[in-house]
Length: 267
Ligand SMILES: NC(=O)C1=CN([C@@H]2O[C@H](COP(=O)(O)OP(=O)(O)OC[C@H]3O[C@@H](n4cnc5c(N)ncnc54)[C@H](O)[C@@H]3O)[C@@H](O)[C@H]2O)C=CC1
Ligand SMILES: O=C(O)[C@@H]1CCC=N1
Image (cartoon, rainbow, N blue to C red):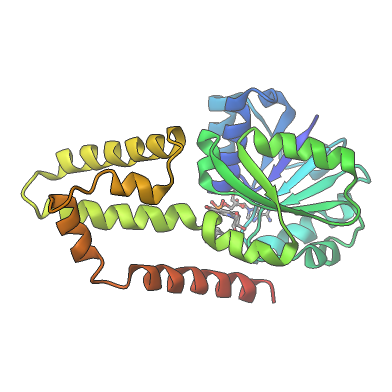
């Protein structure tokens, strides 16, 4: 199998590093290209023993899956770069937020199968939650094969194309929203009199441990929280303070704004 990445930035590298770590494919199956930062591709080649090229004929010939991994606003330039070189066997996999299948088809002027996926950067540790939607032209055999690739760097769920807006906000951008909360937690903790280095390390371990608990426990999140909350204790005092703020409303606004932006990008 041959997989090509047009774009080797934050999200693409999380995916190909995730695929390689999973051992599903050999790094020799994967080809990278980007706009012009050859040094970055050389670094990936050294680190991962992966191929790179700026020759689109070489990249697209016999490519089974072609990942479109530029920013949405760079897709026009990418389309111009590759549209005359596309091969009948190329199956396209777009990771671009908010760019509809129809727009991809029109810009690339082709009828090849297209999948849109919405992964997240947890792909790098094989923990992406990835939404996927397919064009009508994507056959069952290739769908199954692509699911195998996606499952090598996390879990994948098929959704209607319209629902990708929600997936983009909730799990695509989701890690950034959680990181932001952790940042605020660390800032607040530093004000409690411990030094920054200790707080950083302690909170990282707190987050990692809590993630492992979610993974290992069969209890729902509410029950896990209640198990920590003694009657009249410290957790209850802290939670009572938190509940004075409209935390759910804050997240509703956050997700609604991200969904709105995803819809704007698709227009
Ligand atoms: N960063 C994230 O957490 C997520 C990003 N995405 C989507 O992934 C896409 C890429 O995002 P990032 O990796 O964060 O961006 P990035 O800026 O880190 O990487 C973009 C890459 O595209 C390349 N590129 C630009 N123009 C090109 C061209 N004409 N030909 C070939 N390569 C070209 C750049 O050289 C760079 O390697 C975006 O469309 C974004 O919506 C989706 C899910 C999560
Ligand atoms: O911020 C963005 O537009 C992309 C899509 C999901 C995460 N990052």
